[in-house]
Length: 279
Figure 1 (cartoon, rainbow, N blue to C red):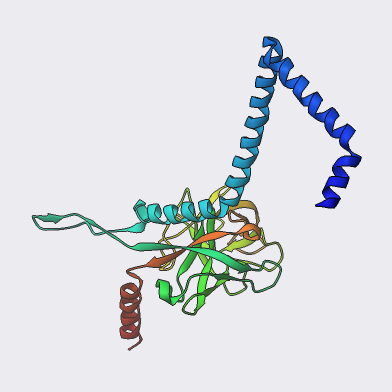
Figure 2: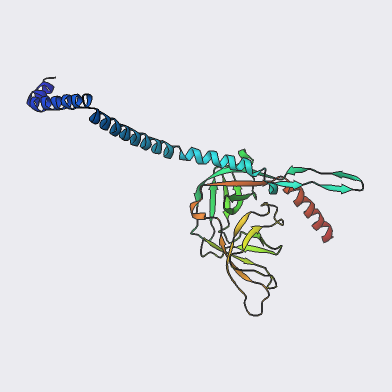
């Protein structure tokens, strides 16, 4: 306490000066309309700036929660898209019954690990068997195909990225039914190669590429990428097409794990037919 008194005593002239200066400013503002209005407007500007700064910081802090909420909402909306339903329409003699049933489900997942600079790249997601995730489910983002679920634990799963030497994505031209197989050659994480498209097919740079109905993993018409360029080797009847991938694998944050509700039924039937033909 003594130190405080000594400090005040040593600076008494400065303190008195500041008090008198403040009192003079107050009297000037209170008794002069022009100065009063000027101070009021300046105070409002400072307050507005302060609130704007606080609002910006608050929005930034809440950005993670906002992104999570948007991802969950997108997953809910995706299941209502036409491609998420199986067309159950049929007709037999005079009896006609129409209807649809959901074929694909979507689960939002956060990317907690990801690689793009290896020959075989994987992602790790924060969803596992407790969330209904199984191996060989598809993974997509809002911009396109990402990969296929490989291994699953109760709370996590790993995904074999499109940027993996063993990944094959059935891909077709948006403007025609012709399709081929998309694979990554291990060089540029922004590009992949599409093969098995015959040279009789009309293609052009910039053509859009989508998933096909021949995959039991992905819904049809999910964006894959666009044609960057193409060539034909002498003596061959298939294009070698360089594809600019639509998904940015270097900036993935949230993705959707896609489950085909009818996949098991389809595979069991196909296996049965294959087995019968083998005999």
